[in-house]
Image (cartoon, rainbow, N blue to C red; front, side, top):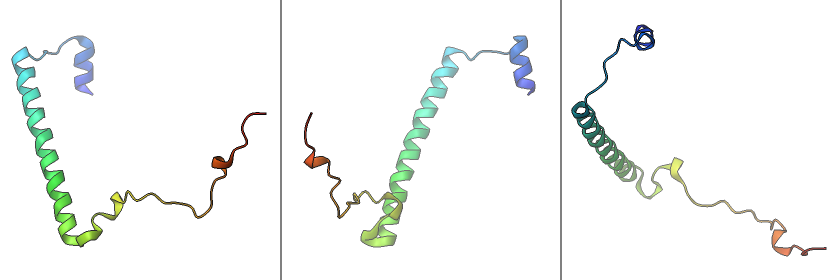
Length: 77
């Protein structure tokens, strides 16, 4: 809350362009680290669960045994 009050009063310092560049580089490195850890985690899950993999990532489409009827539409009247 104090930071908000200081900002409203104009009593804040802005980051220099060098600091911004450093933060952007750090952010890029952290994103890469998260991506690497995510891949490693998925590989560990696959090795633990075998071919089942991660059940929450099942991409097999569920198909109904009935047709919706849309393929047999009658056209315009």
